[in-house]
Each structure stands twice: as C-alpha cells, then as structure tokens.
Image (cartoon, rainbow, N blue to C red; front, side):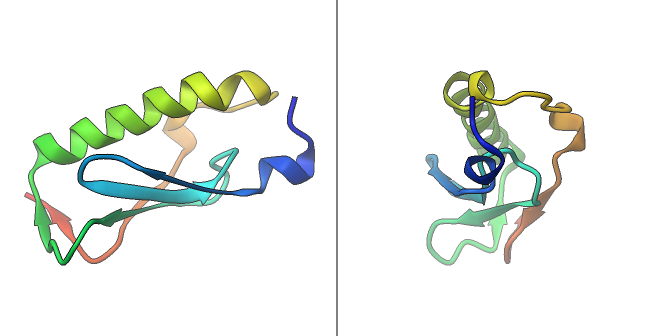
Amino acid sequence: MLTDLDRKEPLVHGCNYVTFHTNLDLSIPVKVIPYGSTKEMSIQRYSQDLAAFISWWNYFVLKDLNGFSGFSNVEFEFENFKII
C-alpha cells in the first residue's frame, strides 16, 4: 500500500499522442498535453490514449491504493488543444 506521502508523488505517463501529468492517486486534475504543437486532436486519437492511460494506471497503481473513488471523480484538463 502507498503511504499518504507516496500517493501525492508526481506521475507523468506518455502514450501515442499525449502525456498525462498528475499525481499517483489522481487527486489533482490530470493535465493532458499533446506532443509537438498540435492544436486539434481527433476524438479517436484522444480516446485511444485515454484508454491506454486508464488501463496502465489500473494495472500498475490501483492495487496499491486504498479508497479510490473512481474515474468519474477524476478531472482532465486539456493543455493548449481541443478535441475535434
């Protein structure tokens, strides 16, 4: 199990089109940052990376948390791009 201090450690995870910046327990908003100077991204590309991030996080982090309230309580913020 992660300690209260460990839960707040920074987490950066890269996928195919974006990186996700947050902390281990996802208690702060997840900043979604595209690679390069992309200003628009298709919903398909974003959805692919979001699914990859959630799957990775569930496999590698969730088992060490106690009391995760679910992804419906996680906030995602797009940094300098929009979904088309």
